[in-house]
Image (cartoon, rainbow, N blue to C red):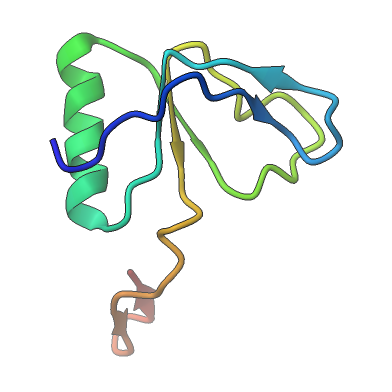
Length: 87
């Protein structure tokens, strides 16, 4: 697997009011790595939570199982002007 889990990560929201230590924490760099991580979690029956910058004032992003940071997936890949869809 190209995207390996970061070990011993403690995720904390911006206000430091919530924190968690997921079993697996991934930071995929592209769509292929993201798909690998999702497949990894599916094969193991793990629940996945996705996190951005951590600005939520709640624990909604926290998970004891699999967390995926979207910080490196920050580009628009394609825009379909006819349907007005963004990917």
